[in-house]
Image (tube, rainbow, N blue to C red; front, side, top):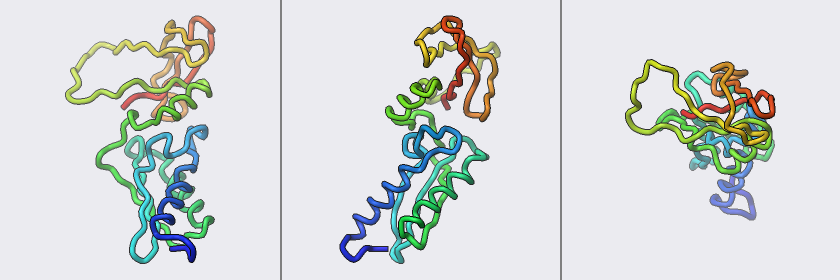
Length: 172
């Protein structure tokens, strides 16, 4: 769809702006752009808007919701032909979460991930000890209580200083 007063470039920018504002279904304080899941928006020669998404995990159950939400928002904005593509290469990394997304996670009591490991990762048969600061009080006196939370991309932690539980987005 190219508007009567706009150009194809303006339409792609508008479509991207719409897709960027779609909230993540599992972390609604983040947009798909904040999470780094929205990989691109383009327009084909016949006016089809193509939005590309990368799942945070292979088999992520939220992908169906993300796809449906982006499709619905773009159609509601006047784009009659929409295609949502799943892009698996390169795989998503928590490093793609924007600084704004990390700030919003912390504001909502969820500890953002640290830097993802790059290159070969040394095998250790012992538990990995990491320090995750509490998003509420900032204390490093925390402990993991469960490796899995409501979603597989989060873990449950507890702060010994303020005694509050919190979720932690795992780095991958």
